[in-house]
Image (cartoon, rainbow, N blue to C red; front, side, top):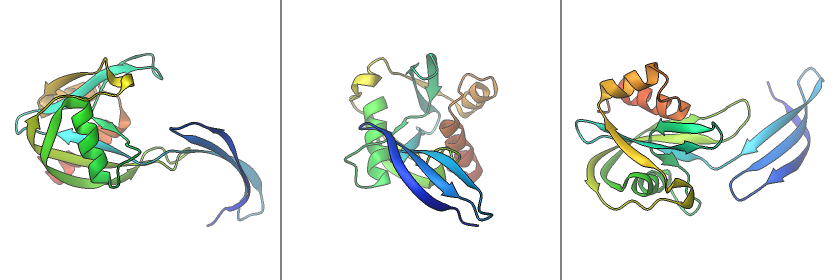
Length: 176
């Protein structure tokens, strides 16, 4: 099944995203409109020190509250998904990974965005200095055991879907 794009226009654009609106034709001839958010892929990192996972906490404007999540983000200048993972981990936690295991690439919001993310497990960690971006200066870190992390998910304390997905794949693959 293929959908034909009849026209496309950029509705909004800033340095972090582009919102595009496409007029489309379905295989049955029906017409419609798709709004699509275009953003670069990002990385989600599970920092594992052999006993605990390091989470990051910050105020999320979009939710109007503080959240806990795994280190994650995108880097404009990074050439590879691995560089993105290493950069985000160091910026947000100060941790440097001696080893990174790629768990896969996943789609983040298939109904509205082309953006995906790469999930990684970082091991052989060394603590360094954090280099937070301006939006991350209030960011804190928290070490939790796998059991504590799973309790946080089940009790609604950690609600970030990308973090939950990365953790689930970590557990399913036996990456710890």
